[in-house]
Image (cartoon, rainbow, N blue to C red):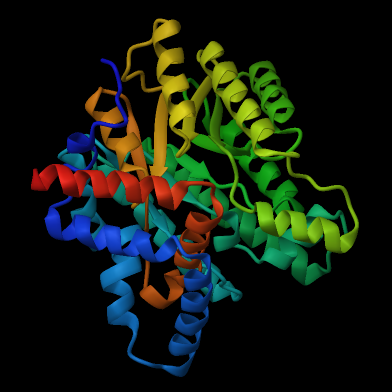
Length: 388
């Protein structure tokens, strides 16, 4: 079935008039970079001061980009999405834990998302960040190859154990789990953990997915190398392809510390490698299961075409599309309507703990070229269509 990302009736079928107007208001606000910066600063101050702003946040930014504060609230959100054949990936968005008790608590919550996915037809994946279950500074030290103290070695052993518990539960329940990529200067231990879990569990199909941030220089080469490694060792490569999420931070750090910028020289290079990665994965679909996380219309159309060109059915379980909750509904809902496998990341958690995620979404929608403008244009056209 052909896919038309401009079919707004399908794109916004899940939103009533009130929800559509709220979405319009939020994206209109985010269009202004100055307003986003001021709003972020004021919100941080208000939360720190204990001012009663949580209700306002929940009814606006949180409501647009998060599925709820608890798993049960997200289940209602997922059920609404299921009506339109869009799956949900529960993503516990609490960040910045620094204690062992905090890491254990986050691990337990991630396992609960895996268990819920195991019971739900409309939750095809689970997902987590390694920094949710281990200290950022510890991962950075391991990445740099520095010697660890005995306490640090013990702490990393607990990180390994938490990752193993999450992936083990996912394998037990048959729920594929997406392990997110993070900053390049902590990535080596994340790579090592992910590859070890893939080698253990990806027999016959991918139950653990490695995330390739294609805005990094050598990520296309890395994709091919990991495919060769998986083929040699007899397991399926789980490949989640994204463009990337930390570009400004990566560039600033490389400049400040005087090392080579790990990021592609321009967006065209990232787009080229992302699309080449899609093609490589589909060409090798017998050994690669692909999750394509993208808000780029051209890349999604390219993947849909690749699926057809290689004689795959639109709902081949080895290929999935993904977007973030609250963004690019014109892509998600039209792909799902055409029969493709589509799932949205649905972040959740206590409002205050979710603010770093929400701030990133607000900043992203001012920094990504045309994202807010594109969303606003589509929403405004749908509002006008409903009035006509």
